[in-house]
Length: 419
Image (cartoon, rainbow, N blue to C red; front, side):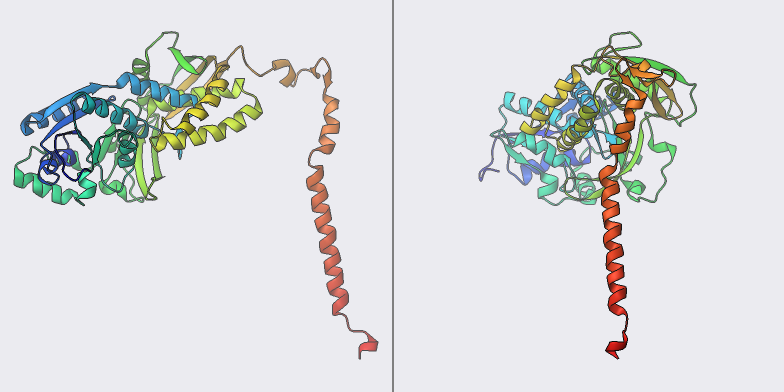
């Protein structure tokens, strides 16, 4: 931060408690002249924008809303190519943050702002994801909640004292983050790893088993989803429809202990119906068209890509280099996958591609030969060699152990000449 701050600050604004109290604090504690609020649309419910607009109006805050749904949806589908999951769940919040940060930075530069601000605490991941983008600019970066050591209790008292438009009630019971790709729920009793949450924490997914089984077909071209049940859909519409259809079957629930970047372990609950369907279908098609070596190596690349995605570093040089390999493998990931939706599961039950590294006759138990020039008996020599080194190593170790035992026995015996 500059030693003599002035000008306007662009604040990542949700209208919640944290960002609401940041508005006066930026002026009072940091000395900046003015604050503008920026809310970025990555698929949140409409009511969140209504609440942000109402709060901004009550604060007298100039408020900007940026539609970044398409950009975010494209990034989500890029993550499908990388089978993007972190510790077992699809990346959602993590991927949204750099999209949001870039959108806020663009508004700040257009409006001639001198600084950027967020309402993140010093305990979470989002502070790092926002600032990874913002610190590449020439603007100052403010984090009032972290830098002033604020607590939710202090913020509530401050808001009441200042008459700030902050709504209380059950809405503050949990911390909820929603976007196109996922809905996360944390806080309150969910912070206890032993607590078993009820159905009330879920919004996107119904209890599994309440809907009749259905199947859908996804069409891929070079790793990109281009059709659902034969109908071409844009990325946003595709994700929204799959969220609705798969959510009705209770698909896409995760309850995990997550390791944050700062080393804290937290309990998180997620809903991600569309992501689950698309990731399962994509991986099923890859299993058909990629060689064993490609699949094995790509798992390592995917895991590293997911780590960078979790960190919010989707534009890092390493991320782009990893995507070079990923894109090369996707040139063959074209075809269709049939997915069954039932009882909380999205199971690929059929896959087809002209790039299939598969021969039905070669694999069939009803065919005598493997191919024209490979007979089943040719595997005899392979079977003899398979495990040879391991068997040899075990035999050598057994012989050495036997000799050592014999030597120990001989050395412990007492002879007549010793008496």
